[in-house]
Image 1 (cartoon, rainbow, N blue to C red):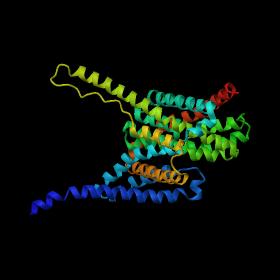
Image 2: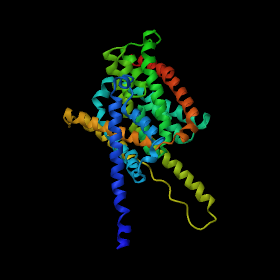
Image 3: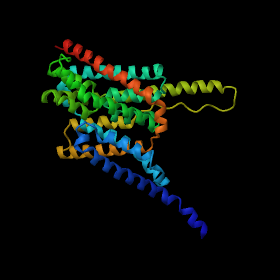
Image 4: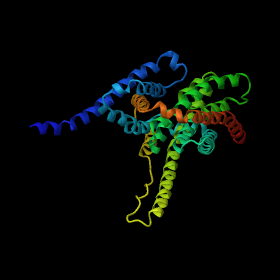
Length: 365
């Protein structure tokens, strides 16, 4: 009889522990959502996602020891699997009709900014700042595409450590918030010589988070805000092709590593591990499917709004869980170099982004 109790005990706490861990993250995220809704925080354009990773990291590095160990499975589920589902449903915020409104100029600015920032950020981070590959790519993705949501999507594809995402999200908070104040000041000072369309292209094409784009552009005009938001969502759409390209690149790198490993063990019995297959991120395809659903107006407006609210909450849960798993000691190692990389990328977004916008406006004039 004694062995029956010892045998059945482990399986039950494991599943219960995961559920308890998920519930704990959900309650934490609910508190974070209320906190992010406070006027002082919401007024800065800081989304619940960003508040979530900061609050989660504070908890993870101070009170984590008080959390039951078997809850860790639920925290990990929220930071990994729930994250992928939430990124897929993020596509319900974008429609092809909206993207068509800004036409070729909006798409051109978005593509040029995203590609140049990703290439510059990856090269700069790895070669000049000597960051590891994942930290360099995550920093570049946060600046290039859509802030924290892009960091989450790339983190999932790269399967990198939580502290690397925390470093990238930190730069999104810092420089995205700075843009909200700096861009309108530059416009009023006469340093941005662009018409309303140009302002919308520039703000939407270079500011990190959607909320920060709206916050900055609303200080110019309602029309500029509308254009900037659509251009920003065009950048979000580019998440899908970029993730697919990243999957191809990771698979190629893995094949090269396996070839080198098999060459080194050629004299020994056995074979090296099979190369990593092409990592097609299913959540990126799910994102695309949600964009198409939204474009076809299959769902009632109320259902789409509810789905978006639930999706924001799921992303907040994922960010909070990532924060809980983040170790500040690991963040410190790459902190200054990662921040320097993000600063250079930010200067590129301001100066290079302005040049790209000016050039695109003149080409399509």
